[in-house]
Length: 289
Ligand code: ZN
Image 1 (cartoon, rainbow, N blue to C red):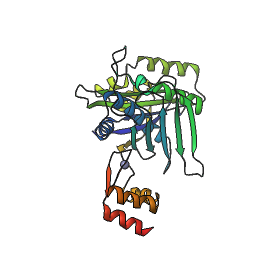
Image 2 (tube, rainbow, N blue to C red; image 1 turned 30 degrees about the horizontal axis):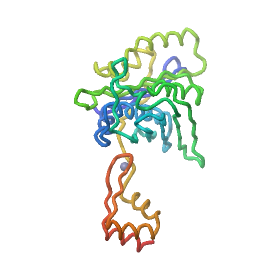
Image 3 (cartoon, protein in one colour; image 1 turned 45 degrees about the vertical axis):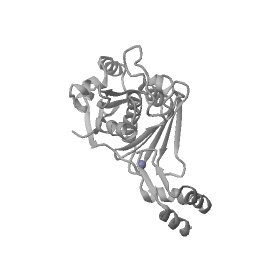
Image 4 (cartoon, protein in one colour; image 1 turned 45 degrees about the horizontal axis):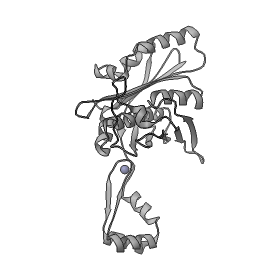
């Protein structure tokens, strides 16, 4: 089954919930960037968060998440939008760490805990919305929970998980976000907290083949699914856009490139696609300026 996301509400609209399965997307990210298991987990968790936060947006709105924790993998950058598309990269995909004391991939060690998560939302207005919170754990789910509480004043439960197989491929990947809106009674909140405390991990639920609806309904029995959408890896880069970037370097620099290197290669950070421009192509670009 392809990756998908569901959005729903519970308790007469006083709770909103999102869940996503991203196994194919995280595997594509791994293959494109050659990520180590630890980097696969860090990037996959951030991409799952990005898709769910993207599902909170509308129309052509989009967002960028930057995780800069000062750890050895460098920054994580993820772009997502309201129509279920995501792309992303980490600075140092090859960095891997030994398992942590719990026998799990050491995402916090790779991400680092000295820094910030930046959330930049392009809502189609002049100024982009941007918020940031300090990284408190580096495991990312806790950090996004903190982001929602601090930056958006919405108490939330966030679960993010990537299970990497022994051959380093992605076995399962996904997450959920449950948000408590104003008007909930204490007893309702306690009931949700109790169910949340019984969730072992999102990856073990996905591994047993539970659907996203089943997972959310286990926590929120009154769940109403409002929407189910497919989600995909998608990069917006194209030869045309890369050409524009090259043109913006100006005549002199392009000429230098043509004389010294004879050609140019531009690699997209987000998808690792390489665009080649030969001497003739560069000459044509210079003449167009
Ligand atoms: Zn690209």
